[in-house]
Image (cartoon, rainbow, N blue to C red; front, side, top):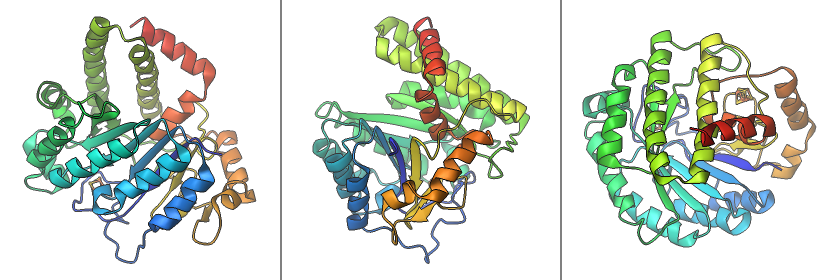
Length: 341
Ligand code: SF4
Ligand code: SF4
C-alpha cells in the first residue's frame, strides 16, 4: 500500500495562475467532487500513511476540509498532513487551520502558501489584484495559532518561472525577513510536456539554481547556530533533491528510479487514481472500484513496473521526495552531506 497520498479535493479555484498545471480542469463545472463519505472510505482502506498532501484547486473552497483531515487522522494517522493554498481567505484559513491542528495533534500540520513574487509580480502571475496582501494576512493568521498548537507549521512555496526568475532572491529575502515561515520551498515550474521530456528555459533554470543556493546558505547559517540534527539531516535530503531536479532539467536525463505508483499515489477530485498527475491515464476510479482493487489490479502493477523499467523521469518535487526517502543509499549519502553542511 502507498505511504504517500496526494489528494486533489477540488478543481474549483478563485485564481487562474500562469503556471498552473491544472488549468484545463480548473472551474470546469462538469467535474464533480468525491464526497466526504467517499474520502472517508478511501482513508479507511489506505490505513497508515506517512504523508498526506491535499491539493486542488483551492482546498479552502471545500467547506468540509477540516472533516477531510479528521478522516485521514482517524484512519491513517499520517506523520505529515500538508496542504497548499493560495492564501486568499485569511479568516477562513485561520479558523480552519486552528480546527485542523486541534483535531490532529499527533501529526505535523503543514500549511503551505503559494507566493510567486513581490506584490506586482505575484499579482500579475496570479491574475488576482490584492492577493499579495491577502496571503501575508493569512500567514500571520496561522502563525498566531502556533503557540497553542506546536504541531502547526507554515511554509511558503515559490514556483520559479520565466515571469519571476529575476525576482527570486529578493522574494526569498522578503519572505525570510517579513513573513518568517518555518520553511521556504522553491519549485521549478513543471513543464506540461513531461514525463521524460523536460524542457526548461535555461535562464529560468540558472536563476532557480541561484535561488536554491541562496536559500541553502541561509538555512545553513541558521542551523549551524541552532544545531538541530534532524533539521540538518533533512536539509541534506532536500539539497540532493534540488540538485537532482536541476540536473534532470539541465540534461533532460534520468537520474534515479521513480517510485510513483509504488510508494506514492495521486487521487483527483473525480476519484481517478494515478501513479502521478503527469501520467494522465488513470489506474482506475474510486466511484466504481475500491482502492485495493485498483492498487493491486493488473493495470497498476504493470504501470508501476513500467515506470521503473522505462526509467521515467521528470522534475516533480513530491514524487522525487518519496523516491529519495525510499532509496537508502542516496538518502544516507545526502543526509551525511547535510550533516557536514
Ligand atoms: S491557485 Fe493553484 S490551483 Fe488555483 S489556478 Fe493558481 S496554481 Fe492553479
Ligand atoms: S518520473 Fe515519476 S512522477 Fe515523473 S512522470 Fe514519471 S512516474 Fe510521474
